[in-house]
Amino acid sequence: MSKKLDTAARAAALKDLHGWRDDPAKDAIVKTFVFGDFVQAFGFMTKAALVAERMDHHPEWSNVYKTVNVLLTTHDAGGLTMKDIELARAMNLAAGL
Image (cartoon, rainbow, N blue to C red):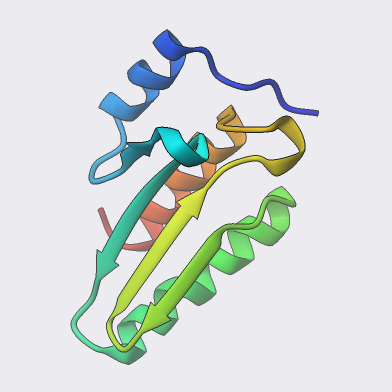
């Protein structure tokens, strides 16, 4: 099982994650991705889903037209872990960031 990040590790990790923000109420990080259209948003979700499946770590997310909202937390650890940070980095790459 992954270990929850302490306050210092969490802050350090977020500095390098373009566009992600802390959600302390859910012990998570969140981001809204906005694409040019639905096909681009769905393409991003497909790329991110393949990475998430390989990692065996799945996001909480929703899609409406060209917008994808993502929340990352590690439920079995009870909060934010390095698995979430690694998936957030991969999602930024999948989005071309």
